[in-house]
Amino acid sequence: MVVTNAPAADENGSKEGTARSFIAASEILVNPDIARVYTDILLNQPTTNSSIERRLDLAGSTTSMRVGKLKNLDIVEDVSSGKESQLRTDSLFLPVGEGETRILFDPLTIAAYGASGEVSEIELFVDRHGKAKLLMAVEQTRAYLSGEVTRRGAADRLNVDEIEAISITQALEPIIALFVKAGLIDDSFEHDVHDRKIRNTPYVFEQE
Amino acid sequence: MSDRPKLVDSSPLYPLPDALLVDSSVLGGIGRSTPERRQLINYIQSNDKQLYVSTGVVEELDKEWAGPYGVNDWLDPIRNEDWIVALPEPDYGARIRDEPTVSEMVDEAHRELAKLEQEREDELPKTDAKFAGNLVQIRVSEGHDSVGLIIDDRNAERALSQVVGETEYEQFFRILRGPEVLEEIQ
Image (cartoon, rainbow over all chains, first blue to last red):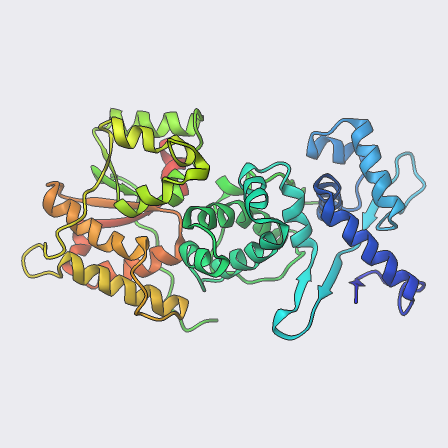
């Protein structure tokens, strides 16, 4: 089952709406460039094409194309008819499986995939271990920030080299910190993330 | 809230100890030919500091997939330059006066880390636990009065601080946070 936090009446209880959200999540998860634009809109909505261009350092045509793709997937919409479109989106949650093997693709996971084209440590991790392992790494990074595991302990749990677990948890923690700052996840982590790291994320959260 | 011990405050940065044991969590994040790397090397050389890496850290950096010079080429200076050197295997019986031996420090850190991660203690100690012994090793065999460990792992830092804090070694050893050190020396 796929759930968005969209209150749209035609999606609640609609098989077609569920299918639409599933397809949107699937498309976003296989395309890091689209995932990055989706994440930027989620962090900074409502926002405009020109603001996305500036924050992500993209060409105008590239931004338009990626936003257009998200609009075609019905996951981004215009919310004003002013001079420049104001874009907004919803948090996508895609739970898969049941019981102990249940996993959840959520906006944070999408942000991690979105960063894989920009952050060499994430790109290398995905190249060596695949996208599925990246989801596990997001979980372990949350556990690290919650004080439950060392980075080397995460290596055991992920079944990767110590240096890889160190590197991937370091690459993911500022993205998690940014999501907390934006109020998109409410984890009350034990550890803060040093500003030095947050400055190096491929995302920008512009507080109002 | 958890029932874990209260988070330790980070050690004051200055003055940095002359002997600095540096973890993979710090070196691995510093790329080749980056300003950060030049700043670190410059700071170490200009301030008469000495960087040390443990055998565990060398093994972690020495990965086939990372190329002949290891992760971010760190093996090259470790093998060929004198401002960063690899420690030999420690004398596990070494100690200062009647304080715990290298071996006892490693065991205690291993217990503390296993408790944190809710894992079995009969696993072999990881590099993190061995740092507690490496600090004693550097003090005893390298002749430095004070030794710092620079690490970017808040949970390992907490466990190691607790272990060191329960001994008289506390006056000689400091656990320093990697991002704070790098920010300060740039």
